[in-house]
Length: 138
Image (cartoon, rainbow, N blue to C red):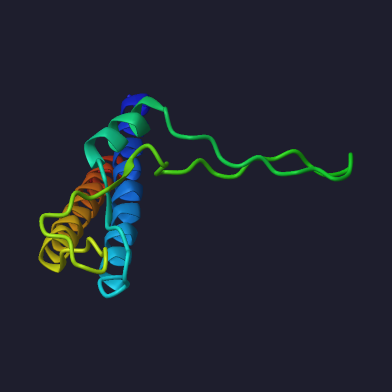
């Protein structure tokens, strides 16, 4: 029972982390809409989520040890790696080489925001249900 609960919450946690990373990528595209030569990027969300749920995420960076007294460590695994971050195919590239289509970016940004909020709502309702189930009857 606890394993299923943990797996369910872990799935939503990974989905939220990927949504957050996608939001950063889309915000970067919007911020660079006027930068000559900037290439718009986006991620294949479904493939990234599938890899994340299978545990195929890229491992974190290894920390360098300059002394034997230092603790061995590794950075947190990345929610998004370079395999999932792709360049967009421009519908109509500009003359300066910029491939940002503001209509597409705004639409994707709003869609991702709504999906992020929906995932948060689902997690909150699930946690509230668990809290109610653990409360003694009155």
